[in-house]
Length: 414
Image 1: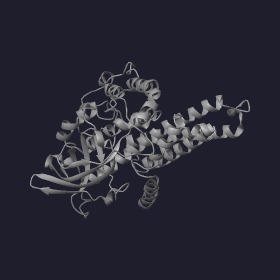
Image 2: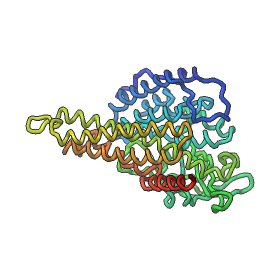
Image 3: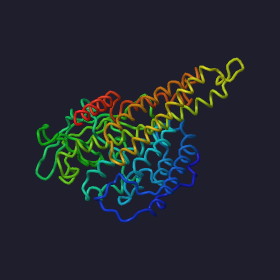
Image 4: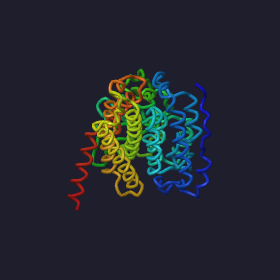
């Protein structure tokens, strides 16, 4: 396979929009003008559809992103598109992030996974809660792709609800010593930095006792289990990570506070839910496009199956779901950026869109008939890939609890 040959957009056009920005300003606001973002979006779409889509089978068969695709993503600034420009990123806000995510969703979800934690749940912990020294040490390298950051929160007994965290961090002189087990950690096999959540004390009236630490992947005491064998999302690597008396300096404590961890996790996860919803819309659009193309060309008894009303009804349901999801994603992203809703809307849009893409993918397989069950047919891969979207960043059940409790609390306050 020939290396990527597309002409890439680079950070230079976004950098033209940079003014003077202090760390006190909100990183939620975009630093990229609309006309420059239009270039970014167009180049991203071209990269996804012209470069990555033709190599989906290669990614599936090798269970890896080709190195030239990885390098191209670095050159485009995709490892740091959501990192503020003062720390080497492109400085996109969440309304722009979701537009890119809908493009990433159009192909193998391993592409987005490659740089997703750098921009999202791991990188945003540093952006929102790190000290200036921590940001200066790590963010530029994260944004460039030199460093792959991995978000180490989930444990065997603590998934969608971090309150059950068992990994411990104990102060020892000027250091912290971390011990515990993390599960299903994205990019763990290739990580350079683990953003590790650990309990420093039992929860009490002063806080949750959950802190977050920056732990280099080569620190003594870290061991990785074998790479997980998953139902889908080939090329997106996860693994369990074991921390056995891993010693890090006090400067590794994010924000310099033992009680930052829970808030950092909840904030990063809520933002990530809007992103995952957008990813789901992009994948649903791909499943719809594959379904329409198949219905227009595949025949039964000499008639294109798209002429059959029951097939048309399935296409209509797919289209309706995609349109509703896209509108919800854009609305939730705007609410995040302007600060009007950073709790209920992220959960609602994540719940709807991840459930929606599962239904759209199922209909895509049905429309394809027996062919849709065959490997090397895109909708078969999509059907397996999207099942995970309802589990990570908080399961659908957790989203329902967040939404319901939030509505009741709001009613009581009023």
